[in-house]
Length: 250
Image (cartoon, rainbow, N blue to C red; front, side, top):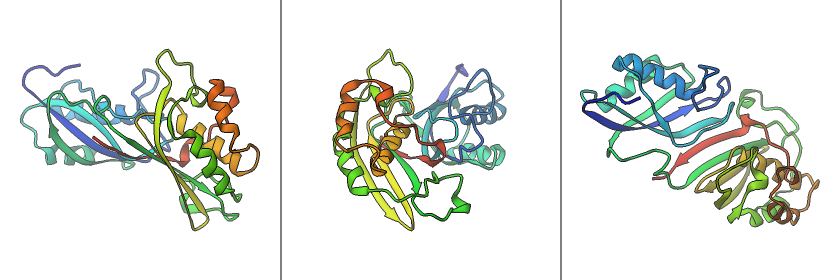
């Protein structure tokens, strides 16, 4: 709902621990969403209904270090004032890093460029207790070279229908610019950079690559998955807790 009158458009840089939330997007059946929590605080600040527009609709349990959103608010608020008010009244697992005035036509989702997600997997046989909410406890070694070969088939522009968890009326063609692997301290980090992602796409890609790394699938089988355009042909959906939205370029 528009607040009416003279308004200013602001871009918000947001981080959150998604463990106890039902995802980013506001829902009619629950008030326990990131978007809903932020809108509630802004509505309290302005005394009117407020709607924010997020750049990425992260799933339940997914985290973010660099989520972006934009919101139109009445004139008279400072950037730091909005940021500080939000951080004072938001739950401790949601934080606003920055508030910046942007052009009235700016839209956080429609104007977004490359998005970067990271998925963390524990390959150590010993559990990482203090990171348990942010890492998938696979606790098995993985063949990284095989996973890298599989990733070569996935980069570029493809129809990723096999890697989407729901039927889509719109196009399922997306561009994956890069998939990077980094090993450190009994952990594997997989970073995905692309123009956009389908519902559960990163988690299904990760589940598929894990199966390749466990030698349950061959790297070459990924090509057939893309061509099949059937969800059942791809790998399992990796748990939400290992996934984090790192940044969004504009």
